[in-house]
Length: 275
Image (cartoon, rainbow, N blue to C red; front, side):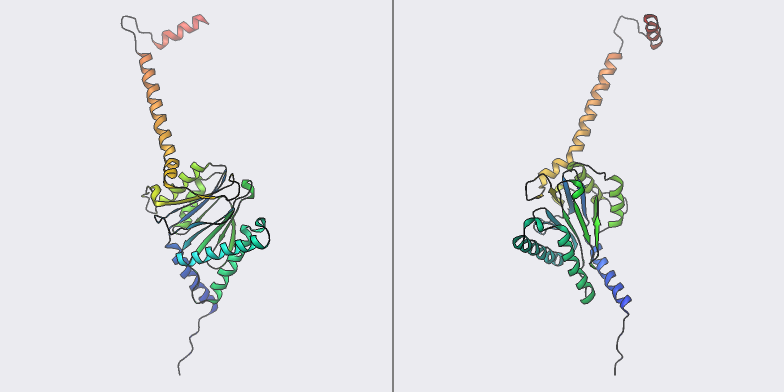
């Protein structure tokens, strides 16, 4: 007769949590940042068909990292939840908090009852009329919910990237500023050799509070190239302007042939006499 195999509940939960965290860490990071006119989402994703950032409802968006088939099922369930609630009651009754609570129940139930937890981490965000009314909720594999403010990083080297993001992000940044910051953070590596990500390697979307109803829109590669190249073009223009000023100053200080050179001391003496 075989002996029954026993595992303590604490060890079982710990093993499930470790399994889920390892699966999430293998995914590419997703960065979520608030800016003056809304909320921006960015991730490294060369695929044009398999999206990690999607629209849920009028002013609600969804971002995920982990196993694609698992968080895609959650996304579809969220769309159905929002459509049904908006149709049954009113579109204004659909909000990110209710959707986050529904996701938390699903994730928590799977984590405690199923043999394998979902290897996903989610962000549900809703853009408000003002930056103070924006809502960003981060959901973990075990169903825990965190109300985030300012910026969020999921997947990959989330802790390291979150520290780097917190050092550079500021409230009230414009869209070009947060996109450049997100791309720079996504390109950073643990060994210090930063990568330069091209617009074709990125998936970037925003919830724009200035749009009338459907706030979600994706940023195509040409627009990303313009946003990422704006600071470089401005720097090159400043450099050319500075070089022109230096050349003009050097030409103005060059002595005229046939006239005695005037020293700075002589100029000071002449000024004193005039005064």
